[in-house]
Amino acid sequence: MARKIFIAATGMNSGKTTTSLSLMHMARKKYDRVGFIKPIGPKPVKFNGLVADKDAILIARMFGLEEDLPLMSPFVLGQGDTRRVMDGDLPREQVAQEMFNAIAELDAKNDFLIIEGAGHTGVGSVIGCNNARIARETGASVLMVTGGGLGNVVDSAMMNYALFQKERADVKAVLVNKIIPEKREQTLRYLRRAFEPEGIGVIGGFNYQPILANPTLRRIANVLGIKLHATEEEQQRIVHNIQIGAASAQRVAELLKDSSLVIVNSSRDELLVTMANLYRIGEYRQKLAGIIIPGVGQISHITKQIIDDSGIPYMRAGRTTSDVFEILKDDVSKITYEDKHKLHLITELAEKRFDFEAIDALLD
Image (cartoon, rainbow, N blue to C red):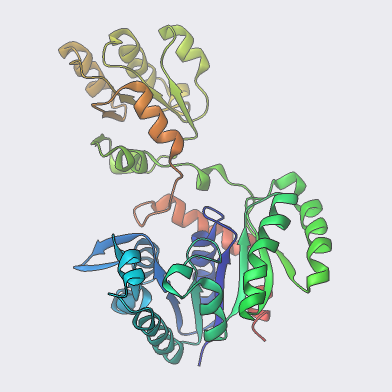
């Protein structure tokens, strides 16, 4: 029987997957057999002929657990599944049984088992199996992952905690991610004071890391559904700033910040040529991550040749500049198996920052 921890969250994008990756990495240093399961998979992806949750696939591929993938993602929410449950075509008892059978099997074959919830605590209520119920029925200790801050962390955590209390699940601690480095000690001190009356511990997670929060060029190309012209190494580059090339070529160059992706309309030949030529200059390689070229107009032959010869990463988008900018502004970067640089950084940071012993002690 495994030591089981349930990774909950106060909402999306709090660093839950990063936490699970770090836990897997650190737990494998102490335990021989470490397993992972995401009982409810809200993000279906096909891998090796199997439809599974994308986070489960990421963990399976990174830690060589592909054979366990059917167990690691026992129920994936497909289109229309919610209505099928509500209509009685997909019995809630069947869904719950699939999840708990998979958890029991992984529990039996591992020394340490990570159970990752989906979204906030109430996710899954419509199918009769929310995160709090899963944590209670599996006997897992709950670690609630939050973003950074103070007031918003306490407010959102207490709102989610209420459902865990209702289900009589055992919330042991809050793990705080995305902490402003210079405020780390102060933030953790006040949060420990805030959660002490509830008997909930506070563990410091990762500091805010732009390299983890921001997308790679590959991620941006995938979000837009367009081809990225870049080497494998360049595709891994993290984009810290997205800039619309609306001003003069000289002004756009002056405004470039660290690792900027510039959106340049296909009609702006002079700006496209300027960006391509700047990319040849060493000091601008740090500032210029690449260009997106929206617009329906053709790029002139000579301009395209200059772009190709410069080696600057670029994407051609058959949309308007505003459409491209809005899509990228609304997207939140997610880690994928192809983001090797990010994955390496997570494991590296986990070694320095992640207090696995404190988390493991919660299970005693």
